[in-house]
Amino acid sequence: LAHIQRWQAYLGSELGIQFIVVGTAGRGIQSTEHMRIVGFVDDISDYLAAADIALNPLTSGSGTSLKIGEYLACGLPTVTTLTGIRGLQLTPGEDVLLGEISEFPQLIKRLLKERELRENLGRHGHQTAAAAYSWDYLADHMLGVYAKVAQCASA
Image (cartoon, rainbow, N blue to C red; front, top):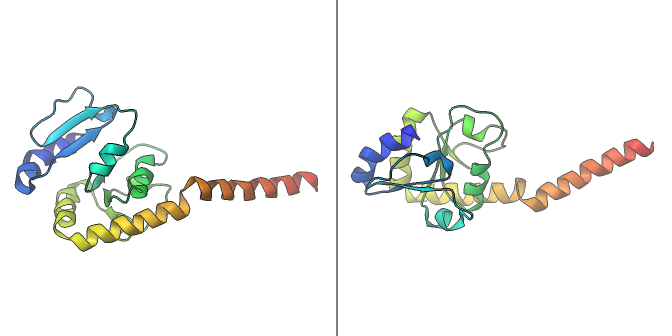
């Protein structure tokens, strides 16, 4: 969150944008003119629908960032790090905009300036999420795994 606090201080007024932090990451942080701290919500869908872009500035941790799937499923052009897409089959430049934390301000500016890039990332990321990470796809995949296990067990 420290990165977003820093970025909002100058990008907010320069670009006329507001950063919205939803979830427990903003605990103990005060909202500012260009950064709204929402906190935990039962349903994030209204916030995702209102967003123009999504940020996932992960630099550490383990496992897969499930936020990326939510962002892409909503068609949000997403700026993330290599850590942020760990465990996912996403193509940088097609599904997401990938960069180091230090590059995020420039990537945000680029996305806001280049409408076609925003639209392409949003569309392609959504298609990838629907094809590879939807519940239907995952259920079909797991049924195949179970069928193979059942065949092995009966042999």
